[in-house]
Amino acid sequence: MPLHEFRLTASDGLRLQAREDSPETSLSGAIVLGQALGVPIAYYDPLAAWLAKQGFSVLRVAYRGTEGSPTGGGPPRLLDWGGLDLEAALQYQAVQHPVLPRWFIGHSISGQMLGLAPSAEGLTGMVLAASSVPDVQFYPWHQRPLLWGLWNLLLPLVAKEGRPFNAKQWKLGSGSLPGSVVLDWARFAGKSDYLFRPEWGIDTSRYAKLHGRGLALALADDAYAPLPAVEALASRYPGVNWETHCLRAADGGRKKIGHFGLFREKSGGPWWPGIASWLRGETYNGPR
Image (cartoon, rainbow, N blue to C red; front, top):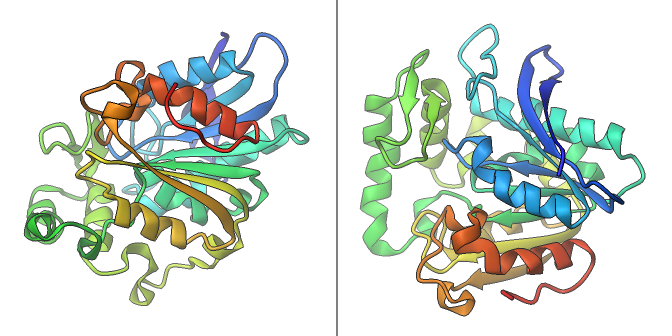
């Protein structure tokens, strides 16, 4: 399938690294695929190429401060990943494919940021995979002290404004991240209600304005995004008609999926046909 690599211009003028897979024949829908924290967009190439074979255009954008996308005039901020960078990708798909169904597939943090993008209101629907509210109240008791320490002690100590953060070293991804983004994420996650805490002063009103179909996928062996945390995020999009499923590796003949595995063909491939069918309007029916 044709792969197009180009620069996508955000509303503040930053030219972001982007790549798009398109089908060789008829086009049935357009997708923006948003990556997890610290994961390069190339990680999603196998799924994007496979979806292109199913008739979908699949766009990915490298958020500011990652993978060659510039940082702008100051340290990148986490909220700009949603309000500016995802927004640029959604606007592009709306202009390129104005009459086709437009979808969002969000992995982890991208699903958390979607409600900050004004053009998300024009989506047909969304798939949120391993995407959650990172709030200790939604995690098993044995994980809560570790997560509290990660967000409130460790990351504020090791991440620095204006410096790259090695996500792989701290098992938070496989790439480099702006330290400013890591500090933002730790600050929000270290308090109850995450982005939705009133004291932050973040305008989260758009989350309730999104509508259409929604597929929320938790992974049974995912320590980063357990089912209650995934359900908590879905509840922040109350206008969406949700289907929620917890995927178990054994159901697809696999030993493990984890937080990242759904997007790898070797571990997540059995579930891809079900996602594609759901995007075509069917009820999600699990691995094949």
